Every structure is written in C-alpha cells, then in structure tokens.
Image (cartoon, rainbow, N blue to C red; front, side, top):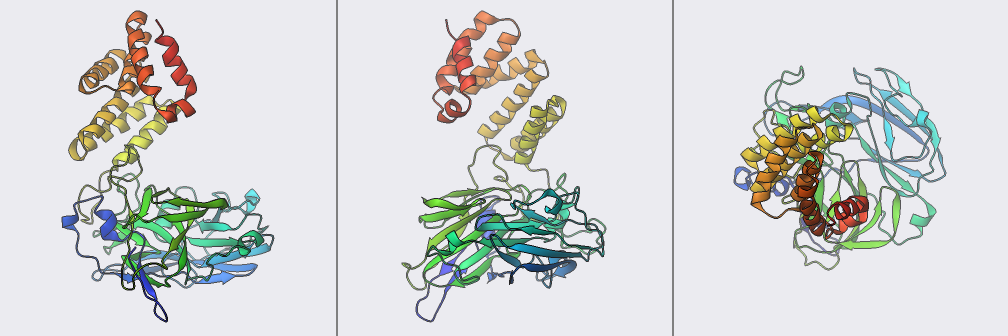
Length: 464
C-alpha cells in the first residue's frame, strides 16, 4: 500500500495494502513482473439499520486490459464482493438473502454468536431463485466480521468468484473512544485475496481469464487483490487512519508491515477491542482472520509515499503460502503448493492415515528439491522419516535420520533416532540420543511452555 501525503484541503493517496508487485517479489522473480500501474481502491457501499437485503448475483468484470471478462459473483449491485453491513450490538436484525445464482448457496455470518439455524452454515441451503430470511439479536462486541458462502463442496468456488462482504458491529464502548470512524475516509475495510487467471477454458467456461479454484491443481493466486482491485491506491487524510483488515484467502497467510518499518497499533481482533493498543512493526494475518489497526499519517512529509507489504519470504517451513508460485503467472494450472502439501501431510498423520501422509510429504520433498533451499529439503526428509516410523518401517526411518544427523546438530533428529532405537529394543543405545535431544530441545521456550510432557520424557529416558 503506497501513501502520498497531503495537507489542508488536499488528501493523501494510500496505495493498496499488498500491491501485486511487492508481494509477488517475495514469491517469484521480480524481474518477471511488469511495473505496477495503480488503480483506485474500491470501497464497498455501506448499509446500516436493522433490515438488510442481500441478493447474490452472477456478473463479470474486466480484470485485465485485454481478453475476456472474468465471471464473478457479487452481492447487490456490484461486480465483485458486497456491501458493508453496519449493525449495533443489542439490535434485532432481519436479513433477507435472495439467491439469483443458478446454483445453491448459503450465507454464513462469520464470527457471530447466533443460533445454529440462523448461522448460514452448510445446512442452511438457499436454492436458486429462493429467499432466506434469518433474524437474530446482535450479541457480538464492536469489531469487524464478514459474511460469505459456506456450502459444502462449493465454498471455495463461490468465494473465489467474489461472494462475500464485511460486517461492522458498533457498541457503546467503542463509540466512547476517540477512534476514526468516518467510513471510507479514515475508517476503511480492506480484504486481501489472490487469484489465478487461466487463459484456457475452465470449468465449462469457454473464454479465458477465468478464476481458477481447483485446490488440487492450483497454487495460491498469482495476482493479489485488495477489495477486488489489483495494485490499488486510495487518498487518505494526513491523520490517524483506521484500517479493518480481512484475510479472505483460501490458504495463504500474510506477515504484514510497512515499507519504512514504522510502528502501527493493533486495536482490535476477531473478538473485538483489545484492552490496550499493541505497537507492532509486523503482524501475521491468517485465513479468515480480522484485525483493526491504527496508522499515524499525520507526521509524514507532503508528497511522500508508503507501502504496506507482505513480508512472506523466509518464514518457517509450513507457513501457508510463503513460496507461492515458482513460475511467473502463465495462465496454467500450477503444482500444488508445498506448504499445503506439508500441512495436509500432518493432518493425515494426526488422523492416523500414515500412508496418505507419506504421499503428501514425498510430494513436498519433490517440490523442495526442485524449488526450495537445502534446509527445507532437510525438513521435508525429516517429515518422511517421521512418518516411516509411524508406519513401522523403522529401518528405513533410522537410515534417513542417520543421514540427516551427519549434516548438523539437530535435537529433532536426535529425538527421532532415540525413539526409533527404543522401538527396536535398543534401550542402551537410545539413552545418549534422548539425552542430547533433551539438552537441545529444552532450550526452546515454546516447547517448554507447550510440550512440557515431551521435554520431561526426553529427560527421563536420557537419564543415566
């Protein structure tokens, strides 16, 4: 997001949080990216009151200067996303949701404390051409929420095409604070998403430039959007500004911060206002998560600029979306993202489906060997060996861990070698490995705080 600051009757221009070129520079070679042309950030229209009429429609938008328009979904009169609904805590609201699509949908009020029958989950289906009329009391504290489809099997497609919108809840506690709240001026909702545009026909749509939404084939999006706009910019007053940020990705997380490493303040999260503002220079924002931040623009030089960037490079293995697409956007389905493979592998492992976990970890290793660095290859091999132990293939698991042991001192490798030797009945040989693993891993504050039993076990089994 780039900001050019003005004073007096002028305004400051704040370019979209997450400009495409900035984020993609962390994902693919920056040399492959064209110079960014900035576009006005679209601010969703606001609807307030106690009765809300929403109609979900199929429409289209020209995201690219040439080629076919992209099929999109939108609520009410737009061509992507939907209006921002403003509600007050304690009010009884009446919703009227009309499905103008050719397919069934639902509308889920994400984050709301309401009866299940009003929640808009997979069971509250809205057939094509029908109307759903839930009513409920707003019990949530002041915060930023959102609405989106939640139909089993089609949520990704419908959200990818643009079906969603913000909800702002206000209450007396928030109203009593001197916070910016002029909607669209100094109080802005910004939703982050990314999309891949396919040049070929896709899912029965003949023209190119259509969104891809097959999670088995597609990588994370190649083009970053804010409020559905690529490379967006907006003019803002030179004062404190409130940004309501939503990550509406399918899996990618963000590590957000400003280009000058300035401090900004987190004032609210999914649950509402924090007890006090939290000063940060970086902030993780995961899928479905909302935060509100205060940004001080009052001290900047007139005409200067500022970017809000996603510092997604260099995250730990498994951070959702750090490696992105290894190739420049080319309009084709890409390989499954490695962090998705890794996370899916551990999900299968935790379920006890070790064969399926092994398939995912082996695919992640292949990806890292082609595109990753040596440390990520090492971690991928460790994941495979750990799964082999769970499968009872102890000799194979031990052989891999022995190879990893030669590369560097590693408490996790020593722990695995110890566990394998113990399972093979080699108690005496396992003890020094348990001891070394305890000496290394007991220095990790997170493990000590969150896996005390594991650390205690290493200590006991490594005791002479």
